[in-house]
Image (tube, rainbow, N blue to C red; front, side):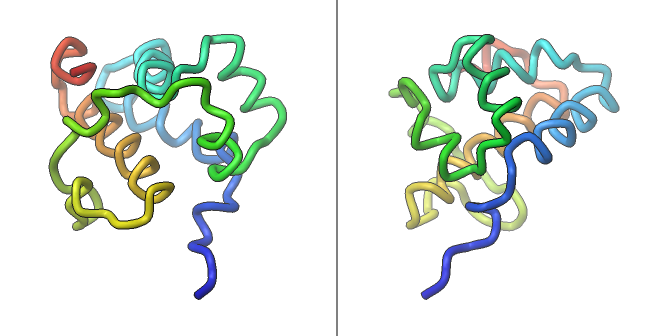
Length: 115
């Protein structure tokens, strides 16, 4: 079975889309960064380094310092897929991030997003 193409997509190319999605709904880049850092354990500098090095999603998540222990509390549907039922661990991490950005864009309070 071949890898899903999102695994080899550059995080740096998708990151601006996360920011645009948030900004269209009057949220900020800082909030997007806060969510990413909360989920992955990256510092602001570490996140910048990953973006500048043009890491793919596989590398981005493999090098994350500390994936948040409460990530299992992220539940719901994104792109028609229930995130808690995704079998592949890497795809599940990507879907978790997608779900959190969706919640931000839908106006959910940061305290609720960062479970």
